[in-house]
Image 1 (tube, rainbow, N blue to C red):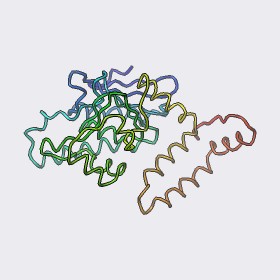
Image 2 (cartoon, rainbow, N blue to C red):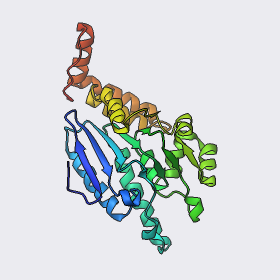
Image 3 (cartoon, rainbow, N blue to C red):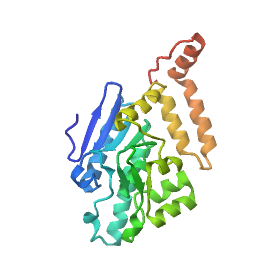
Image 4 (cartoon, helix red, strand yellow):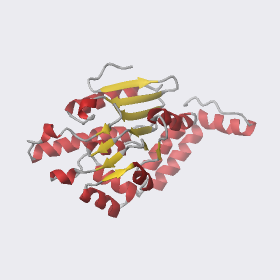
Length: 259
């Protein structure tokens, strides 16, 4: 267990799956300045540690993943300060999206406002039975400011994104699943099911996972097909491609090295 952070707990198991827990249960894990500073520092550690094969982000306790931003911190901000606040959120959450290992949000309970935007920055999402997601910023006279308008629209399309944002309503786990906001709903222990979901992925070639994440991130861009071709081609020069094809021909399980 890592004790390097005031508001986070970072743990890595023997398989290389790290769990990053936002640990402010009395505040329902609300995002404040310290959380963002700790997230930045934790991401530095994760990026530098090649033994980490996948990342789970979750919240402490059963009530909330992250119930939102700490409104008291910015209630008196002016326009310039608010814009900088938004840009800081964009930068940190983009770092999560740009990780080239699978990143899975394990949504336990409330994931609202900035908390849902954090979950949307992850590559995958699994929800507890009591999960509740939404972007209620309009009830404060605001709009989502940590990337929610952009990432939600990519997942559900413009009409549904506008409906959810302009109504500020919450979606329960089943609706979130139907909308494609989460990949699955856990039937048992959330983090254990998250690890099970990732365990099948981290058995695959690490460089293939990396390039898959990079290629999918280009979807919808003019350069998407060209990026896919280049990323596909790059893998032919890797030891893992040679190992994977040899294992297939020899009818054995591959032993990938990440090279």
